[in-house]
Length: 406
Image (cartoon, rainbow, N blue to C red; front, side):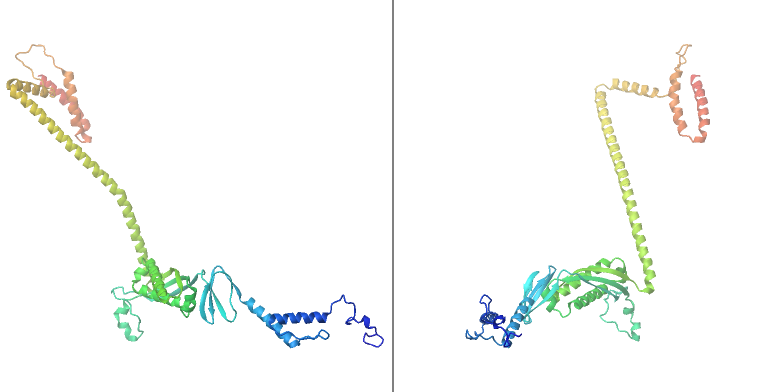
C-alpha cells in the first residue's frame, strides 16, 4: 500500500517532517549551505521564512558553480616549470616583462604568455658548396658576382681564379633568450647566411693551394671570427661555439694534380726533417773537432812561447857567465858540444900514431846505437821492400863497422 494512500501510515513516510527529531532535515541543510556560499561569493542572501524555506533557483546556482570552477582552473593553468637548461621569457599583453630562471613559476593565463628557450643546447649545421678562390697569378680579390655569358670566357681575370669544394660545420647556442626571440626574425637562418657569407669572403682572400694545404686552420679561425663579429653586430642573442672544416677538395679535373702536389710537399717535409736530423748530428761533432783543434793550437802556442822564454832565460844566464870569464866559458861550451855530438854518432876516431897495438872498440854500444837508426829507416820504406832492406841494412852495418875499424 502507498504511503500517500488512504490506508497508509504517515508515520512510516521517510519524508515526514514530524518524525523522530534525531534525524536532520536535508532540505534545511541544503538551504543553509547555499546561503553560506552566496554570502561568500557576495550574492544577496535569500529571504525565507522558517516555516517555509525555499531553495534558490537552479540557474543561479549552476552559474555560480561554473564560475568558481573556471576560476580554479584558470589559476591552476598559470603554473609552469622551467627546466635547469632553459629560461622563460614572459610577456604581458605582448610586452616583455622578465626572463624567468629555472624553477616553478606562475603567470596570469590569457594575460601573460611565456616562451621557453633552451640555452644549453648546441645547434649545428653544415655548409657544403663550391666557392671562388683568389687568383693564382694575380693579387686581386674575386668579384662580388660572376656573369655567366658567352663573352665572359674571354675574361682572363675570371679564368685565373679557381673553384674549391668546401664542407664546413658550424656549432652555436643561445646566449640571450630575449634577443634570440625578438631581435631577429629567423635566428637559425640568419646564422646560416652569416656563416656562408663569412666562408665565401675568407676563401675569396686565399689561393687554392693554401685552402687545400696549409691554410685549413686559418680558414676555420677566419670564418669563426667573422661570423661571431657579424652576429654580435646584429645582437641576435646567438654565440658561435666552434667552426670545423671537414672537407676541402679541388675540382675533379685537377684533383689528381693537386694530390701529386700534396705528396711532393710531404716528401719535401720529410727531406727537410732528415736534413735537420743529420745537421743536428754532424754539427756537434764538427764543433767538438774545432774545439779540440783550437785547444791543441792553444796548447802548442803556450808550449812554444814557454820554451822560447826558457831559452831566452838560459841564454841570458849563459851570457852573464860568459861576460865574467869568456875563456873558460868558451872552452866549456866547446867541450860540452863535442861531448853531445860524439855521444850520438857511430863514428870511431883512432889515433894511429899515438895508439898501442891493442885497441879496444866498444862494439856492443855501437850496435845498440846503430839499431834504432836502422829501425827508423825500415819504417820509412814501402812494405814490399822490407825484407830486402832489412838484409841489406845488416850487411851494410857490418861493412860500415869494418870500414870504420880499418
